[in-house]
Image 1 (cartoon, one colour):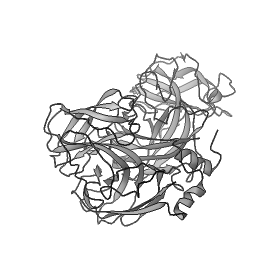
Image 2: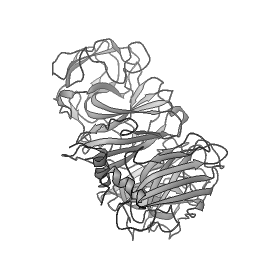
Image 3: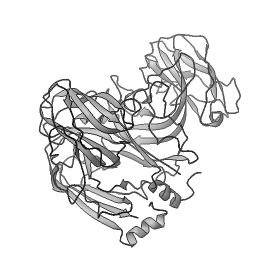
Image 4: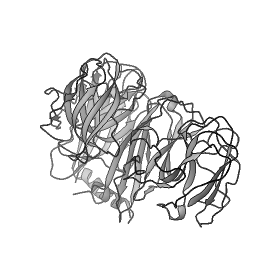
Amino acid sequence: MPFKSVAEVANAVEQGRHHIQHFIRTGVNGGFGLNPFADASVGTGLPSYNAYVGNALEAAQMIGQRNNSIYVGPGITSEKYLLNMSLTHGGTTGFLASVYFLDYLLFYPYIDLDSTDQQDMTNAVALPRYTDGEGVRMMMLMQTPGTGLASSMTVNYTNQNGVAKTITAAYRTSGAIGCIGSSVNTNATALGPFFPLADGDRGVRSVESVQLASGVGGFGVMVLVKPLFTMSANELNSTVEKNFLREQAALPRIYDGAFLNYIFNLSNNTSAVTPLVGQAQFIWT
Amino acid sequence: MPFSSMDDLVNEITSGKFNRADWNKITGGSAYTAGRWYDFSGLNGTPVANAWAGTALAWRSCDELTGNGTQIFGLPTGGNVSPDTAHVLNVSAITSVATGVPSQLMLVDLQGYWPGITNNSATAQTLTGTPTLRYTNGAGCRLFWVQTSAAGATAQNISLSYSNTTPTSGRSLPVTVAMTASAIVGHISHSGTAANNYGPFLPLASGDTGVSTVATVTFSAANTGTGALCLARPLLTLPLTTVSVAAERDLLNQLPSLPRVIDGACLVWLYFAGAATAANTNFYGGVEVGWG
C-alpha cells in the first residue's frame, strides 16, 4: 500500500515505522586511478566485506540480510522507502565526488580476464527483484587485481523483454579490486559505471556470455544492479544529506531483500579514501 | 490529470508511477570548442546513437518508443501514461573528465527533423512533410541545425522560411545567422562565440513563440557538409560545475516546474561547452519521471 500523503510519510516516523542505519567503510582496495568508479561493497567496515563468493560464471542472487549490505530494517509486509541519506568522506586527500546507490541483484563471479574464449554463464537463478529487468544495468568490476591493460568485451544478454541482445564495450582492468573497468576513462571509449545497452533496451534480465577481445589479466565479476539515486560531495569532511521527500521529490522504493550498497568515484588518484561514513533512514507504510 | 497536491504526488509515486532511466554518452573523437552547443543524441552510449535516419529533406518524426524508426535513441520515460500526465522530477549528470566542466546540459523533447540537408547549396532547399507535433502548432518548439557530416571551410549564413504557431507561413529569421566553417559532426553549427552565432536555437521573428513547420532552408554560399534541421521543445537545463561531482536538479522543490513529458516524448540532451571539451569525454546520469 503506498503512502497517500505527506502526512502519512511524517506519521511513519512519528509512529515508529522507520529504521535508522549507520554504515561505514574503513578501508577499500587501494588507489583506483583518476575518476573511475569503484564498488564500496568491496571493503572493510559495516556492512561486511562483499567478496562476491560463488561458483565461477554461475549466477548468484544477492539478498540483503543482517549486515551483508546496508541493513534496511525489519522485514515487513507493507512497502518500504528511503526517506533520508547522509554521507561523509573523512579521508585526507581527494574526495568522494559522486555516488550511485544501487540495489545489487545478481552476480557472475570469476570471469577470466585472460581468456579470449566465449565464457558462458549459468543462469540457474533469476533476478530476485526487478524481475522483468526493467532499469537493471550491468557493471563489471575487478574481483582480483588485473594488469591495467585495455580491451573490449562482447556481452550477450537478455533484455527487459526477454530478447537476446549483444553489445561490445570498452573494458580496462585495474590493479585494484573493486574498480569498475568500464569507467576507467583512460579508455577512449569509457562510458561510465554501467555497460551500455543495445538499441531500444531499457534493462537486463540476465547475462548469457562474455568474450574479451584480448586477455588483460585478473578475474572480473559481472553484477546486475538497479540504480536508485545519486549523491554528490564537494569537499572532505563535509556531510552531504538528502531528504528524498523535500529534496528529490521521489522516495526510492526499497524492496524486501534489497541488497543496498554504493559505488563511488574520486576526485583524485588516492587510496586514502576512507573512512566513508553514512546514515540512512528507511520508512514503511 | 496532473498532480493535484503534494499528497497526490507522494501517493502516485509510491504507487509505482515512477521511472528512472540511467544514461551515458561519450563525445567521440573530436574535441568540442568552448562556447558552442552540441547534440548528444548522435553520440554512442545508452540510449544508442541517433544516426539521423530518413530521406533527405523529408520530415522524420521522433518518439520514445520507436525513435526515428531506425534507432530508438530517446531517454526512456516510462512509456505512454495517458490519461495521467508525466513530469520530470529529478535529473542528474556527471562527467569524469576535467574539461567536461563548466558546462550545461539542456533536456529537449525532439519532435523530429529534416535530415540530409546539404550545406553545398546557395539556393533554397525545399523541405517536405508535415510535422506531427506533440505541442499544438509547435508551441514553444524551437529549431536547431545539427551538422551530420562535417562542414567545409567556406563561411555561410543560414536563412529559413518557417511557419509560426498561428500558424503563419513565410516567417524568416530576424537577424543574420552565421554557420560555423569546418563545423564538426554534432555541432549545432550556428552556435558559438563568433559574430552572428546564435545558440542553441535559431532566433525567431518578432513576436513568434514557436515553430510549426519549415518550408525552405537557404545558405548564403555553398559549402560542403550535411546537416539535419531539428525541431524540439526545451524542457530544462542542468549546469555541471565540477568534475566528477554529480550535478543534480530537483524540479519539484529546488526549481519548481515539473516539466511535462508528453506521451511519446523523445528526450535528448544538448550540451553547451563552457570549456574546450576533450575528445572522448564521458557523461552519465539519470532522469526520473513520475506521473499521476
